[in-house]
Image: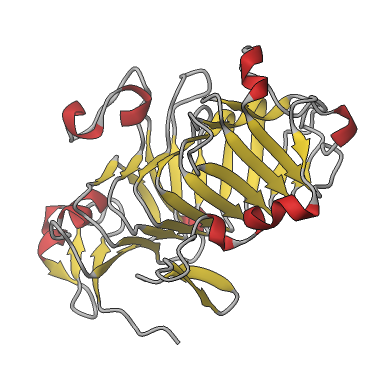
Amino acid sequence: MAQQQPRRVLRVAPPGRGGARAEAERGEEGEAVFATVQAAVDAVPVGNRVRTVIRLAPGTYREPVYVAKAKNLVTLSGEAGSPEAIVITWDNTATRIKHSQSSRVIGTGTFGCGTVIVEGEDFIAENITFENSAPQGSGQAVALRVTADRCAFYNCRFLGWQDTLYLHYGKQYLRDCYIEGNCDFIFGNSIALLEHCHIHCKSAGYITAHSRKSSSETTGYVFLRCIITGNGEAGYMFLGRPWGPFGRVVFAHTFMDRCIKPAGWHNWDRSENERTACFFEYRCSGPGFRPSNRVAWCRQLLDVEVENFLSHSFIDPDLDRPWLIQMMAIKVPVSA
């Protein structure tokens, strides 16, 4: 059994009931209580080396949140156990950003518009909804950007339309999560494994846009034992398109609703991408899984080719220094 890691616990007061006085209060067990999620994150020491759990009470937190590079080992934990009960929401877009941090810190455009931006390593979130509430047609509007290594998300929801979940850099593990959108709503250039996740396609567009730029990069997205659902209509959603010419995406053992186009994949209107993009499927099912109708430049993987994509070693390749360990029936970060 893994040794219990030392930790500190901070709490965020229920929305609307915290006020400025909450920062001076103490919880039932002596934990500091903060008025906002950002105030709790700001209280994490620079260069933090102790797992710091920030517990959120049920409610809707209307604020952007930034976890800086020096704020490592942070956990955002929803106390209700249900992500629907705890929502962090904001409505920034690539062309209109309102944030307490300057653009020199969080960036501009799509990169800087996330409701929650995580740049501290070894981040964990559980039982929380991350939402960008900008309406359909607002353009790029990120709910969560992750630019950090060894991050894990359990039982979380990511809500938005275009560019909902920006898995930009590092290694990420998502399990039992719900992700919705319509255009490139899971995108970036990280190494990510999404296991037992629900992908919901709200209207016509593309699920993924991976931006691997060369064949030497080890990045890619793997969807393992996931479910893809739609709005009831047929044939309006692509599985993905290559944001970078070597974009790499794998759907394995995944149920595909009739919303998926028979062709499956899109070349981003660049025929040269068809020679370099790595778009794979393996033993999927459902009315949207139609391998005989797929574009000629995607592939159905053979058993001997798929092993690396079906194991956690895809995102945790160092056997001598793993960052995920087995805990009961799931993988959890060693640092947790």
